[in-house]
Length: 621
Image 1 (cartoon, one colour):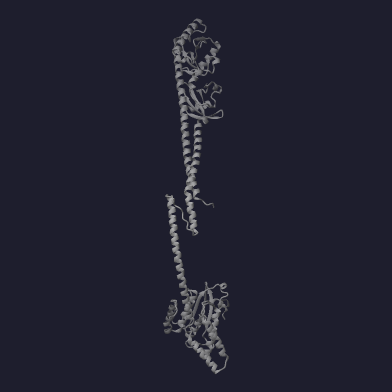
Image 2 (tube, rainbow, N blue to C red; image 1 turned 180 degrees about the vertical axis):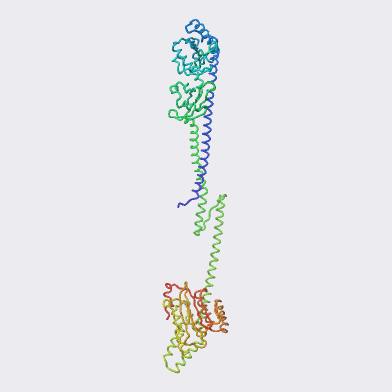
């Protein structure tokens, strides 16, 4: 697993904080700016279309006044009642209508340029057509055809209607006609139509003030789905998909694809006419300021990020450099090389850390020197104490070995002397050899452990001498498994136990039913040699007293030797000898029942046979 460095973590955290900050600020700014720009563009388009709608309504209302004056003029209504072939009345009323038209137009100077013509058409097929102070004559059949179209398209309640038509084919598409029905003098049935043709080119000057950029455009649709303006839109079919969306949206803004380009449409219905004024701009152009903001934000953000990361790197290095120096110094200190760091010129927290480190190194060096000195003194004292303890243990061990019953040696020597005087026998040789082996085995003072076989051989020599002394044959039953004969035990521990049995277990002498059994076993990591007899046993109080002495884990004192029985002293010395060799956890234990016998168990640790070869104890016979 790749190890994380502090500089890398600082750099990473700085980068996360900076990126998150720039990202959150950039995204928030971009979103809010985009929304604000979208609202502003929408408001701008709505204001432009509302202004165009308002100006258009004002102009149309001025033409409505002119239309009202014509439709209410008595000469115009009387003209509707003339007969089809009455040329005089036609001339008379035509002249009057011309003069009225001239006077009306001159009174409304602002309408002069936008006005294309004014005409009055009756159901009798006669018409008066006025165009800039001129009266025009048209084909009666054409006039009658236009009259029928006007009558069908104009409501009967006298309301004005705006029509995308002209009485002259040449003016078709370039003018819009404002028409209303006129009744006769008696206000009977509708007798004719008064129509005013308005030049769209002049009205377009109002609409051209709607600034929609290079790709934006403005158009007008009536309630029937017909395209009124501009002339190029007239080529589209009435009530196509775009016109249907405009009519369905009312005054709402919507998006629609036009010529493969996504565009925004803002529609306003005129409060005066049935026209729907629509402004359209490409969405891409509308979003261009937002895109500029986004590009600028990203560019500035990337530059800021690069500068911030560079500063973060410099800042991280300024922090990590002294920490790395501190780390290297600590590594040298771990090796025992007391490394100090220069702290000149640093007054910040890192300077304080370096100062604390130098102080720690100084104190540690002093402390370790004192510890070394104390350790040397302690080792010296321990060595002296160990030598003293070893000498004491050797003295104790030698003292134990020398505590062999001198009476036994004296009696043995006296017996040998008697044999020598009375008879020249081989028994003398046997006793002398056994005694020599016992003395040589007893006087050895080394602390090394010997084997079970060595101790059994020492007991055999002891029994040879004992049999010659007492003159009676007695055999000890040895049940030790052959595999345990080479197990280690302590020198001069088994023979004192056997001697103790002969002195105390058989107070009335050895009988034929008496026996002594020596056995050994391994159990739970322990090696035990136990000696059983069927002698007199011990009374409970005597057994408790003897066990209490064994628990004291000490050698018998001289005053105890003088005032106590020899058997107890021998057993305590055997117990202590085992402990001096193997430790306090081992030793001699006694189980006895009065009148039935005693079992003495010597407990020692189980030794590793592979580590026992070559010891002196195996070479002893």
